[in-house]
Length: 445
Ligand code: G6P
Ligand code: MN
Image (cartoon, rainbow, N blue to C red; front, side, top):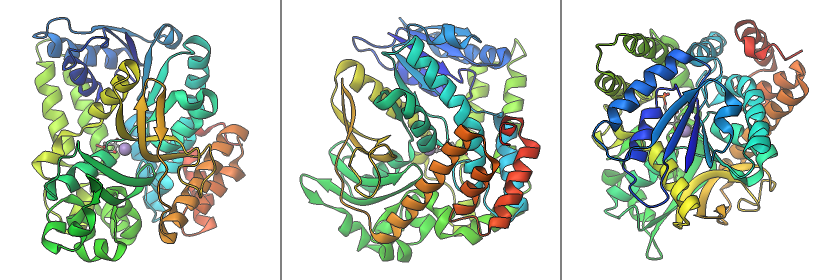
């Protein structure tokens, strides 16, 4: 079985390869094709993968190419993990937004819109090529903003594209753990958009255990989301929000914290990864050691500004292992080998969340089998959450429209309608600022 990874020179590719190495089952991936625009990044990542494979018998064969069509032909699965504009682009997304006093996070608010505007045209081109060259392939989209990008691709690939994120899985795992439940036996009642969802229940053997957690301030305060949001707020909500909702519920504090840092997250990662890829040019360097050290530092500093404003302290050791590669592997196995399972994924709604139309990509528990991911019907969200979901989906639709019609006015509308952008004038200046720094937005006229 052939897996093609777009963005194959990306820093997190060794996580995926590590997951593949642990898969010994019949029908596993035997061939990995890395595609990237940048040869030296491919070379660096291939070095890490070679060291990972050194001690493993029958490791999947790895090849690398800068030819997209060649990479796609004959693929059974395509992982799309691209970063249009690189980490320099991410740092610019943050800088331009913060200069206007709004959030520049890569998936939330103004930064997410800017990133979406330059990523959607590239993702659509990929989707069209997949439809032509590998029409039977399944596409698993990791590219952020993952919900929006998945929706853009679904217009060309239908339900053959599935978006993934590890944050709902991590959240479900943490809640199960504090409740003393086995995450594999628990059904996590979670729904929303990517990075904008809520856990409303956790059912084990038909019994909802979440009320027990919400009633117990000690338990509530003992894990990441409890520390981030505070027990009072979680009790008021009666649900556990995805960590990215911290940018909404504590917007003023997070914007201030991000404005005060010496280097934003994107700038930090840009510098950190520049060092890693430079180091990989030295033939004597141990690739795996350098990669592991860099990864650990990245994990430890994840959302550190948010945690600091909340006084949440360090991350729990259990939360440092990421996990998106595990979701990707579980998804691929479920489809390729009909290993039926339930996963929280980004798929077309198809009636699961009645307030949105059938084609809207949402993040929701899905039953996955050889026929793909089937969202389960969920209870409606409370009004305040429905309001946010609908507002942000409306913004995403404007981003998709702008990418299609190339209109600046539509791009302004996308920014202006976002709940975290507080003036149409700010939206206008954001479009000015972003088009100045991003060559990938030159299509906006
Ligand atoms: C979480 C999010 C991902 C994000 C990742 C890395 O897993 O769900 O969408 O890509 O963190 O974040 P970072 O700030 O390290 O790039
Ligand atoms: Mn994510």
